[in-house]
Image: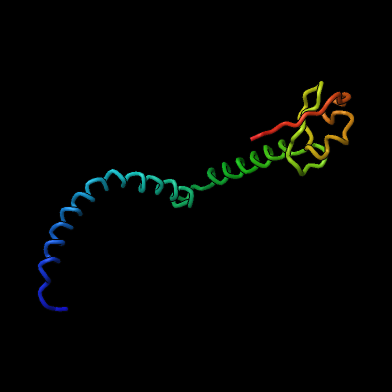
Length: 121
C-alpha cells in the first residue's frame, strides 16, 4: 500500500491528466448560468433589506392568479371547470354537469337553444 505504484497506474495517471485538462476547458462557459441566479436569490431572501416591493408583487400576482382561476370555474356550481358553450348567445359559463339543468344563460338570461361541449388546454 505504501510501496511504489505499478507501471500501469503511472501510465493511466498521465492519460487522466490530459483528460482532466480537456474536461476543464468547457467549464468556464458553464459557470455564468450557475452564478446568475444568485443575485435573484439574494433579492428574494431580502438580503439587501428591501424585500417590501417584492412581497407586494408576489401578493398581487397570487391574487391575480386566484382571480383568473375563478374565471375558469362554472358559474353555477363554482367547483368544476367550464366545459359548455350555450347557443345562440355564445357564453361559456357552465361545466358539463350543470349545463343540462340550466334553461336560461346565467350571464345574459337568454333562452338556451343548444349546448355544445368545449375543450380547453
